[in-house]
Length: 625
Image (tube, rainbow, N blue to C red):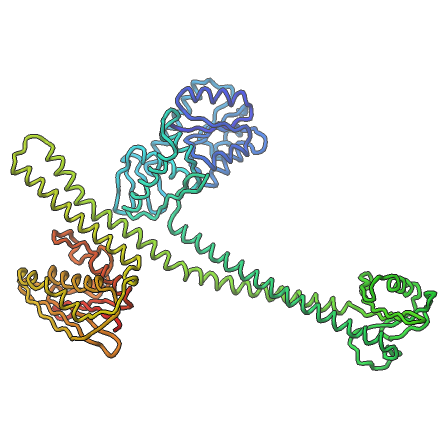
């Protein structure tokens, strides 16, 4: 069901258009001002926007131009009472696809709507996002050379998500537009189909992800964009932590500096007040570093003496104000912020002695310190911002690599399962079809059995790889005799290699003990021997060697003559699903055995690698003893 947005400030006309279009099978939303209409158009997915020009908030020209500026390709039909040529030109230049003048016939409106919708369908052959394209005519989802066909509802869901260009699409919108108003479908249907599409995107190696946002619905996101968001989050977290640390550190520095300056001032005031003779006359060096002056006041409030030569004490009116503040204060120590002074009061039997100290130097020092700390903070934040960008990139790199590996793993696993599954389905259909004799049916059943066994082997290998990835090799490690384990693992391979025309030679040094998982170490030996069985030249030989290397390691090697491996193949051969022959041979080779061996080696703090020289391919496995 196609969805149309009507933006019209005249409510009766908007309701009439909604009724008209709904009666023709369209889903219609209405907005009665330009701002609301723009918000609707940006947050939902519409096949057409019918837009009035003269509206409160934003006019139609502005709405159209903003939609085009944000690359919304939805067709726009403008309705307006303005019929001047310049008005029509302004509307088309703003981004409208057609201009219909009021009053208009409903048949003309419907014809315009149909024409715009047909034109939209004809002009767009595919919708793209990231490295993925949806072929609208073939119903195929493509990524590079890989493609997958979508069912009708998968196609509709994917089309709506692609049209949103990364914007959120609610489950209600998807239910309405894909399943329709009268359907019994529920939100779980949307979740199921989103899951189907995620698997198909992964199967073609797409970097597009369908992300679910609680209460908002779904949106598409490019994996690189998600990695970028992760980097941004890391940078923001690191910068927030640094900002808090700098704020706390510099706040403490400022606090303790202020406390130190104030304490020094108070010590000076206290010394001067308690040693009245120290409050010397002008010109004498009293050893103080704080500008001060001292007043002695009798019981009537008159000034008896003034001491200290740092201030002009001739202004009696000002001095009287200071005396009143100091004498009437409840505390012996106080501030006079209007004059930038601090006082210390001592009461004697006959008078008050008050010493005032200038605090402007403290204020200047603190302001200077604040400026210095602000500059230092800005410089530190700038330097750390650059460092955090580099650090975030370094930290996210393994995540991006794991993401790519996961996507490739899912795609490869899906690819490996498709062929046997196709064979099984085809032969099952042939079994059900009439007209085949018993030998043919037996052949069909045999093909199903063979492919089922191949799928079982692949699934078992995948499960084993998952177990190794989960770290279970480390959970069951014990002291064991590796020499005895290797000799025991050789026994079942002797007849197998003999039947394949290969000669097996083993040189196992006795008494090599290691700490490890016996089952998985035996599996490494079996994987290397089985690999030699599959790829050694016919009539060739297989040499297995186990020996100590230095005093802390042992080396297991399996060598055989075979097709030479390039240095690149020697590295790639341990990747999942990698096969040198690049074909799906019926030798139960899935390209997972050596990948499993590599993960086991890693779990045992060891290493595995391959070398090829002189027509001899050798696989080495080393681990600590």
